[in-house]
Amino acid sequence: MAMESYRYQAKVLVRDYLLADISLPYTSVIGGIFMCKMVYDISQLISSVYFKGYLMLTKLQRIDWNNRGMSSVHAVFITVMSLYLVFFSDLYSDDGTGLIILRSSPLSSFTLGVSVGYFITDLAMIFWLYPSLGGMEYVLHHLLSAVAIAYAMLSGEGQIYTYMVLISEMTTPGINLRWFLDIAGMKRSKAYLINGVVMFFAWLIARILLFGYLFYHVYLHYDQVEQMQTFGFLLVFCVPSILAIMNLMWFGKLLKGLKKLLTKRQ
Image 1: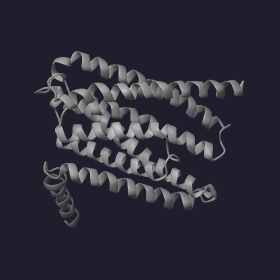
Image 2: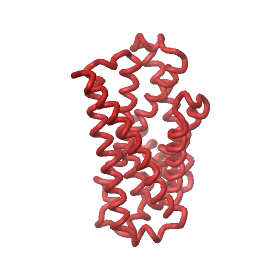
Image 3: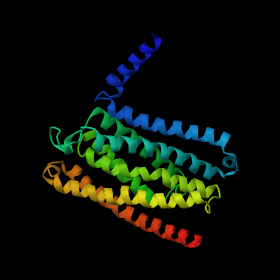
Image 4: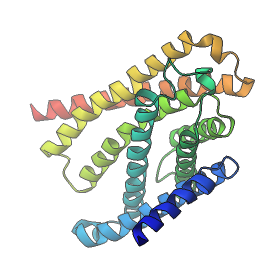
């Protein structure tokens, strides 16, 4: 009986407070920031106990280690939610009612708020330790992402395209794993090679081909897109375009690194 009571109270909390339209933007962003802090602390605790090499790292490397654990958890969360909302839920299906670029739900808006909380937290850490955790390209990427996601969350416009872009976060755990392998001295290992090959195909699918599909979707629904507010209209075209260019540049570096790695092993 006690367990059922707790479950009921949790449902009431989610329904009447966390997913209430008035408080949703604030609770979701705060929840995202809290999630980041919690994961960062858990990563620090687990790593210091179960990974002997962790304590041998410099202070900056340990901060980077925990930060990457935080970004990996966010990446898994937002990738799963994005794939579900875009391809498996009825929210953005062609059979749905209303303009597809204006569709949103408490769940979709709450998820975006959690992501905004993550980007705010990560940006704060980047600025705090600049440029150790990333240079200007990371600042630009995070600023564009935070602004676009926040706008989609608050206005309800273009959430489908925001989620399409966020699917590209599926490559983040692979990027972080590559760093972990490197810092652990496993750059010549088979795992490092496999990671490079998987990263190549994951990047090609999630950050190259998927963006092509996004632009094609915008083309098919342009009559709806042009009904968005001016700022939202500009975001739909500018943010994915800038991120696509950055993705192509990073893809070139990834390809060059993979070729170099394969050449050394021959």
